[in-house]
Image (cartoon, rainbow, N blue to C red; front, side):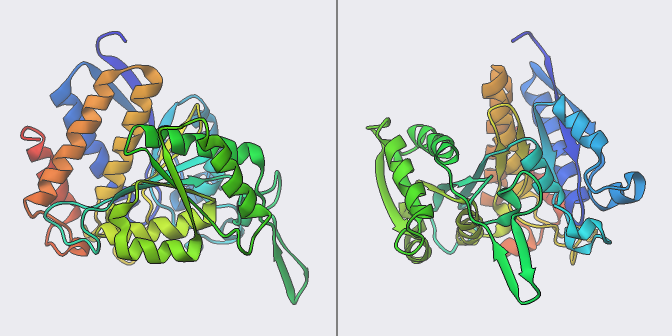
Length: 360
């Protein structure tokens, strides 16, 4: 890479607390980029969410999709699609639209507890690798429509689809990640009941795992997995599962690690990546400077790591490491937002992280 390479990253603030936590992440990353040097980021602001409905007539305008097609990566704030006016409320929500449009098949959701906080399960440090395009969420299973329909007013049907190619590519992501971590993969399924669908998911994951002899493999039913996580989340490394199970488990592991407010997430394909905190838009605290920005900050860290690997710019990885260490140091020294038992505001926490960049 040439000196001071400029990376263009999309910026979509979204709804609710999005206009607070996304700018907080940008402020911290910009400060870290300045500290590290040797690289640069140009933020490309794009319309999305409730304000985009008012200005462009759509929650996810075509203008935004066209602009993102020319970018490798972007930050996505949470959306409050439940509060959108019709017909937008009934349409595929913004994050779903972006996942589907760009085939962001891998949803990577870490759960890691912080020193200085009070997690339910201390020492939690795992990653859920969630297949993001099929499974038992109806909005991900069809070329057109949502895969959910009512043949009569009293009957509702949703399709759950599992295919070998989709499982193979998400399993490869999980095992590649495990090779960079503790070399352990746990497959989560419900093959005792959903024998053909999640049975196929389990079996194909095991087949892919044969290409990674250094990685140990086990598997659990989804219901048993919840119990194991509550009792010993710190005993697991990489979990791979279909999208609905992954969504539920990642909310659980986020709380076990300390708060859903610290739960980051990256949606990616081989060509595109979208940083998106695992939590929602929290409209009840929007605009009050109460939001925990950690999940969005760490999602941005994941994005920079992905972009560093894709572009070959090691400076981005240095920025990501510096930001993550500064966040950890901030929490360790007792600066936390209310959801973690502290008194910091979103803005004061952001400033505290920036202050600690020099010591991280």
